[in-house]
Image (cartoon, rainbow, N blue to C red; front, side, top):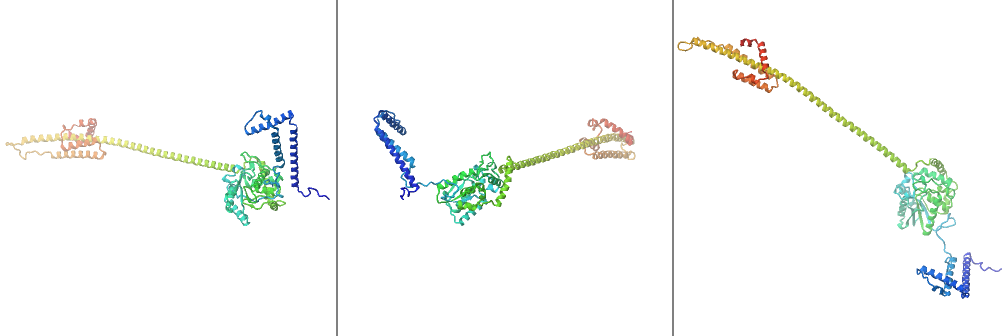
Length: 577
């Protein structure tokens, strides 16, 4: 039997042959048209049409060169030039369009970069190890943060617990003989710290630690962002399992007002698809570690590679610091089981209850940051009130102490005033008593002085009479010689004189004692005592002592005192008589 001409040719050779035949046909058509134009170029209207067409081409070329030539010389341009350029340009254009620039290539170029999931029939050009970053500070505090704007904040940095988890994962890879060459990490703070530790453990240069700006961001949960991580994460797992579906288009969290996106699993699939396409385009034959900030991102990429329905994504969820090496279609399907584990079923059951509460109370505040802020504000308010009450108590205490102090000072002043008043009263009483004593002393002194004066007058008169009688007796008893005889000298009344002197001394002593007993002695009393002592010591006459001049104000009192003395002391009266 005859053998067909193309029986030994494969499909690629047939495609190339068909392209060559099409190109030859186009060339023949172009030549036929050119020959036809040559045969009819003498016709006026044909010539005008060709010259006009060549003029248009020339003007277009001049405009592209920036010359803008506009003259009539192009109308006389030879037809051969326009025909030659037309054929040349048409041939190049048609050849490029139909052959794609590979007319003389021996084989078709292999397309790279675009990754189609699942990767069952497609072999990946690199070896991939998926890793979740260690526990962040927010995760240790049970806070779930997914807002892309806050991922780089240091409050989401790697904790000490996370550092230990990452180092254990690196030791596991070392024991398995894995030597990564590229580390691609998210810009989340925990992922950056994790990548730095991985690079340090495996001595990877900084040029091989490559950041990924947004393709590795975690799935944003909208209004549930910054909520308690454990409870809210279980609710999201239950929502995805019940509502996401195989493609992950269902189960969208509620929106948020702070700019946090509200994404489904399908939204994250778009980013992960672009991530794998970029990695397959940039690298070939490398061992790449992908550091994700959450556990859903690497689990979702594993489901895409292994062809697992996306609603089961959380069955493959990564724990903090967990790493899985050589992730491909076979390894993913080896991990996935036909039925969920009992532990996962319990999580879904709790998550459904939590999801019901979240949807029944959409206005309930669940943002841990806001709740913490409210708690801190409440604590600060309580502390402020406590400080205010303490200040008020201190102010009241200080006011009470101040009033007590003022009251004490007022009481002391009042006591001092009363004491001064009592002292003044006592002084007044003392002055009155002293005044009375002075009056009594003055009366006594006046009486004594008057009595003394009277006694002096009486004594002087008695002495004068005695002297006179003695002189008379002496004259009578003189002898003829003018001498007195002793027998005839009459005896003086010495007893009378002694009695008078004793009386005077007693009066003076009584007056002095009365003055000494009446203390204190005033100036008037001193003057009176001095006068009395002077009168008693010198026995001055009545004319030398003028009691009326010394005691003008006491004249009436003296007269009364003299009368009382004369009435009380009969001896004085008898002596005066």
